[in-house]
Structures are given as structure tokens and as C-alpha cells.
Image (cartoon, rainbow, N blue to C red; front, side):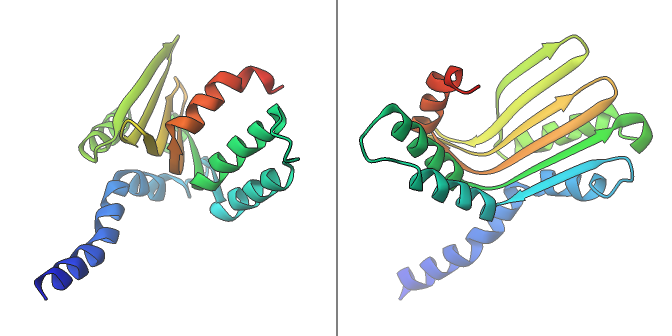
Length: 174
């Protein structure tokens, strides 16, 4: 009985834990996505599932390089539940550098790991995600430019197998 009660408690608490992981991102998006100068794009999992089905249907079954590409595309698309892009002009919206720093700090507290950072002139890019050595979940790209801040939020899971394939074969996509 104790095991069943414990299992029920864990199952009930899991959605609350998962919601807390993205609370900082969700709050930031809610605050700025309806700003009159912001651009907000949301692509739902339905489109990604459709892409996955199309990629699976395009496979010929001859184990060719094209089949491998379609299989990888299907796995990647199937692993994504949503893609949200929020682009905010800093001066028009009143977005301050401190808010961006607070967002990054909150993400680190929510177990987001900084995977890579890039400085290019006045532009800073931060690639962050949750996960482990076999998969990445909830991938975020923060682009902090002189006049604009963009948050790219990919909800879902990408495996190291998929990421490895994409890295090796990105030169084939024109």
C-alpha cells in the first residue's frame, strides 16, 4: 500500500516539477510576447508530428543515404513538442540588460546548462539545455544583440544519435 501511495504522489507531483523547470522562460514570454513591438512565433507539436510522418513516408526502404536522412529528420521532428521564438526590440519595449541577466540566472537555477556561448561584435549567443550525456531537453538559444533580444525555445528531446547525425551531415543541406 505504501508503494502504491508513493507512486501516486510521484505521478501527481511530476507535472508540477516539469512546469517549474520552464517557469522562468514561460514568465518571460508571457511578459513580452504581447508587447506591440515584439515578434512572437509558436509552432506546435502537431506540425512537427506531420513533418515526422512525411519524412517516414518519403523513405524508400533501400537503406540509402536519403533514407538515413529521412529517418533522422523524422526522429528529430518527432522529439520536438513545440518551437517558440520571441524577438523583442530592447529600446521600444523597455527591456533592460538586468532582465536578461535575471533570466539567465533563473535558467541556471532550473538546471539549464550553458552548452556554448558566442560573442560576435556586440552580439552574444547563449545555447542552453537540460539533459544528460544521452539527450538534450528544452533547448534554449538566447541572442542578445545591441538593439534586440531573441529567445528561441525548443521544447522536446533530442538524442545524441540525432545530434551527431545532424552535425555530420549538415553540409548536405542546401
